[in-house]
Amino acid sequence: MNIGLQIPSFKYPGGTAAIRPTLKKIVTTAEDAGFYSLWVMDHYYQIKGLFGEAYTDPMMESYTTLGYFAGLTEKVHLGVLVTGVIYRHPSVLMKMVNTLDILSGGRAYLGIGAAWYEEEAKGLGIPYPSTAERFEYLEDNLQLAKALWKSDETSFKGKHFSAPAITNNPRPLSTPHPRILIGGTGPKKTLRMVAQYADACNIFERAGKENMQKTLNTLKGHCENLGRDYNTIEKTSLGTVHLSGNDTVDDVIRRIKDLSELGFTHAIFNMPDVYEITPLEIFAKEIIPAVAEL
Image 1 (cartoon, rainbow, N blue to C red):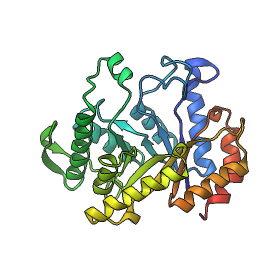
Image 2 (image 1 turned 120 degrees about the horizontal axis):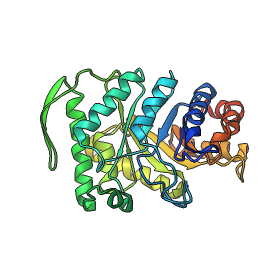
Image 3 (image 1 turned 180 degrees about the vertical axis):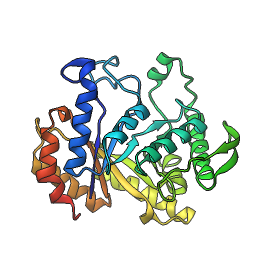
Image 4 (image 1 turned 45 degrees about the vertical axis):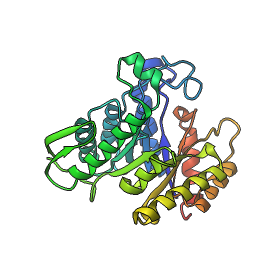
């Protein structure tokens, strides 16, 4: 079982000046601790009530932040959980992911989803299309990624975006390309796209074991319909661990074992107190070694 760390909050003791050194300590400690991956959200407003007290709490741009992480690390994989398709032109997004992959030495994921934070988009003046259109945007992005990563140059025309002569120079280092991870559990569109285009999916642990199993069963059905090998898709989960709160080491190990039994191989966690570093040290000493063989 691989263990990932999501960093969704940048509100640290010391204010803005503390963000850079605090992140440096978190990501270097996480890599030394044996974490497999590091993730940030693709938001410009904080999610009130989940990772902050107000939408105006500190928030960093995702790909710039991952570029900083790439320069600090050598082994840990890097990704956005997940990129919202409304924020960047697909051709520009592909160049950003290629750049991250090259500068990280081949450690990038393309995490992507249909976007959902309407208040954020409207507050920033970013167009927020209908749900149906956003899923069409998502499929355009996925088709462009597949077409681009097959060659050095291609032309593309989707439902909403076109790129008459998009180039892929320099090519990403990941083989055959950065892993595509789709976030979301929509049974008709999202999971069908996972089966058709993606290398990985991401499912919220808070959905509960029964719903997570139902989601995986639906994904398996799409794979069967499309002739895709279900076992080639990396199953990742996202949950919260608060070792300074009510969670214990035994609780976390049990949760990870439950995920493994469902078929997950990559458990990603955020931690409200991660900036204190102690939770990462506990993962290093007691949790990661205990679940490594799952």
